[in-house]
Length: 39
Image 1 (tube, rainbow, N blue to C red):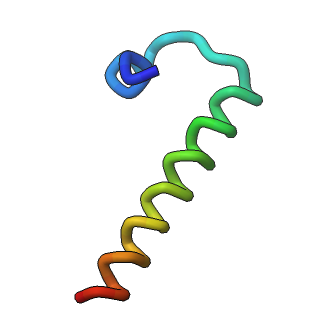
Image 2 (tube, rainbow, N blue to C red; image 1 turned 30 degrees about the vertical axis):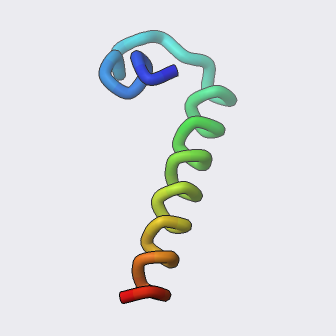
């Protein structure tokens, strides 16, 4: 899974790519929200 972060040229289906970016986008937003909450 982490290899995918660095191997962006790895062929991935559209559904997997979309899910991948939505997942990390949600994680990023969650972390940003938590930092904003406690900052």
